[in-house]
Image 1 (cartoon, rainbow, N blue to C red):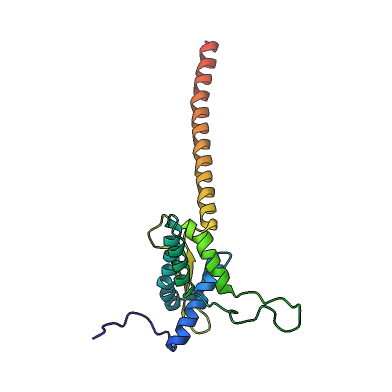
Image 2 (cartoon, rainbow, N blue to C red; image 1 turned 90 degrees about the vertical axis):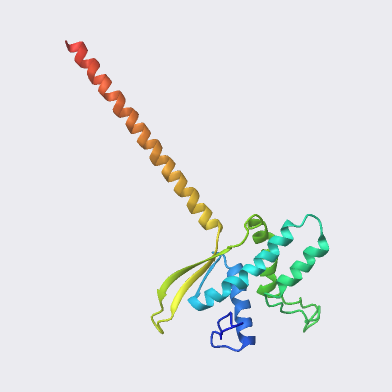
Length: 194
């Protein structure tokens, strides 16, 4: 029986798999295009992983003024990313040298709770989309794009499509009006010639 065998192993140990999913989640949230290209099984495993983190940020955004609960949700979401550089002293190496910057996981957590939590505050799930790309040339593994929905590029494309349809419909109306007015002018000219 296949009970309690919910996830793919992806040919890795559990520690390696968790670390890989954290890295993929960080890459997805920090990417400018809000999309990454990976293999299809990895994308399918990443989807619930990232959506749980986004749900935590959405729940924190929807809290009215409970700062303790919001902090608790933020710390829970931090478990989905690598923390990095927490044990480094305030001044490392030579005197006066600045502390190295925190890792991408911290930046991903910040972006998750500021920008993405606000964007998805009214959306009850389904924050990602998987698009199949076909097979990779080298090893014939199936590739996919996993992206966040309602991203700025997608909204911009929808607005441009609306403008195009609106402009096309206004051109049709203008051409119909012009076609209606032309025959009346022709009939008037024929009436005058008689």
